[in-house]
Length: 330
Ligand code: KG4
Ligand code: ZN
Image 1 (cartoon, rainbow, N blue to C red):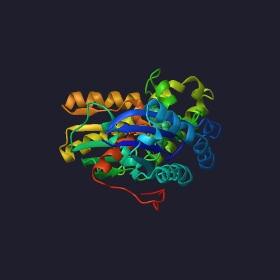
Image 2 (image 1 turned 45 degrees about the vertical axis):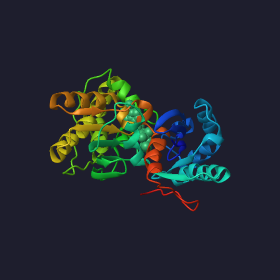
Image 3 (image 1 turned 120 degrees about the vertical axis):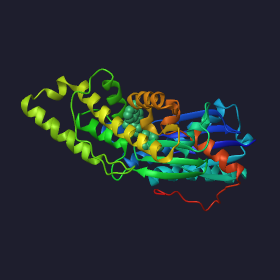
Image 4 (image 1 turned 60 degrees about the vertical axis):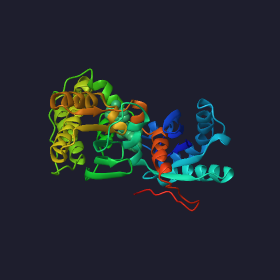
């Protein structure tokens, strides 16, 4: 019955969780408002904010779980992928904590953890299942054979789906990260504008052309009506969301046809998107799939998913030495 302290610091959220025998006792995340004014994550600011936040975040996570440092059996951390300066803060903290208390260390792959966020609460999918992981840095279709055997069968060849939301939002002058704001506005508008749908074939994704297509079509509309963006912001957001979601859902359909898997899961920050959640639910009902969508707290970056993944690794005795180093790319 391991009690695991888990740390996540791969991007701009400092998160700590206590997971006891796979059960999430606490999950505390400190965001970083500093990036808003720069319109994106500034790595240097991110590492400094992690450095400030990590000790208080862990202290709150322990307190909420009603555990003391002496009751922790292992320390888990995100080894990568992510921003190297951000990862270094979490890895160093985990190493220090483990060394001070003589505890084993468990390194976790951030992308594997997004998928295993489904095991943070019920209902849990059974292996094997299909998972679309969509975040600010990644877009992957994964066949999850078992907890630690995950096969990537499709991926983006350029931007991630979250980047597509964020960069389109930047064109519209929305604050970073624009995904949640596009989602909010999309619910107030109609998808009236068509954009080109780039498709690199098979189960792969491409989003960088979409951004250009949005830019050109908006420029054309602005020429006819200088107030076009201001007057039609909700419809523009609905149109952007509609095309991104329809690209994702189409590839899920292809992946189901190809793999024969009928359990379909969503993971990563973009799975917080209401259009994607609803669209997948509807597709599932129509096609008789079992659909799994985590609570939003477990979609965006969080340490609970790191602790849950570490629980699987603990059972296999998959520990790391004190010489482990963060890896920006896996
Ligand atoms: O997984 P995540 O928290 O961080 C990593 O990138 O690993 O994902 C963040 C991404 C951002 O691009 C953000 O705009 C997007 O998730 N996002 C959303 C929504 N909430 C977060 N995109 C669309 N609709 C949302 N509701
Ligand atoms: Zn993530």
